[in-house]
Length: 448
Image 1 (cartoon, rainbow, N blue to C red):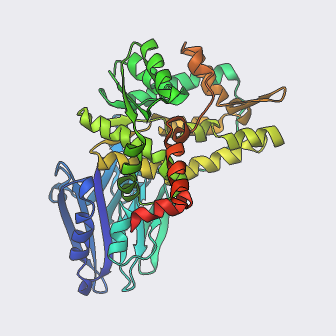
Image 2: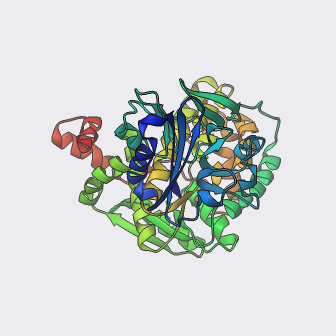
Image 3: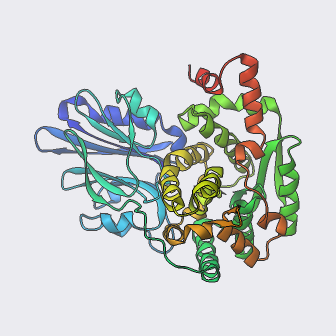
């Protein structure tokens, strides 16, 4: 984990000070910081900075300066692909990463195709173009409305902002005629590969006992990765008992943190500050992750695995059921694809920020690129099954769980959003009602 930044502007505008200011505001992403600067044509300069907890990213030891936040999965590290001809290959490497580099007097940025690591950019009134891992440090130096660097694109800073050099972003593929049995076997292979490459040995797993986290935990245990299961929720929530029962069926112990209403409410200022948004849906999802990250840190863990992107890839949301019931499954492919693309902002950005703030790396095996590419080619009817008027969300994933002999209580368990299953949303809405304001207004009050 790291924080990275980059600036392009006039020599006279003291870019090094701006870079150091940005890095100081990203201390939660790493306390060891360094910068690299180079003057370019037209009295301009480029500065790149990085902060991490190890100090291993040394610009002095690099043939070409590279600031990297993230990891590559498998044997291919991606580091040999940072030359002028290699960035396209780098961006297509399975991993969770964002980078900034300087090539031929150009400040170049990119993110992994799924968009698992945050990277923002914007322009100051003096014309300086700036990039950073977090939004708020850019605002602090005068960027009015920082934007996300689009996942899967290689872009370069220009005097007017940025331009795209290469675009490897996700494109909706044609659905293929894949039968259920073949899909189940291939998903078994790809998901086992994903867990093996994405989840390090001894990782924590944010565990509810639902379909997604159960699959991650089961495969991690069968792969000899010795996972540590963590479940959080409001005291008395039924999901906590289900998590304990499911973990026991895998031969695993789950660490359960029963939260009080006051603990949930007291966390809100921290959560809102870390995730840099007051969106009620994002905050509701983020609070359980926040506590899972805190417990993982207390347990001395370095990684936390989660089931993010499963709902988008395999049709887990209620809106997909509504569409299937109303219109059939013909239009679902586009809806699910759009949700996958949107997950970068809605799921991965806040999840990464919460994990890194706790000193962890977030691991998301469902976002493993070969698995994503295959799932997007599956027929919509395999992901959201409609038969005799009955809709089964995440159908093929449930068939995978059955194929792996997971308990029926997991295979057939209805999908319930984490903010509801954990009891968090109930606490937030009750407090907003007590204050006589909307939930959004209540959350905004924590930014003042």
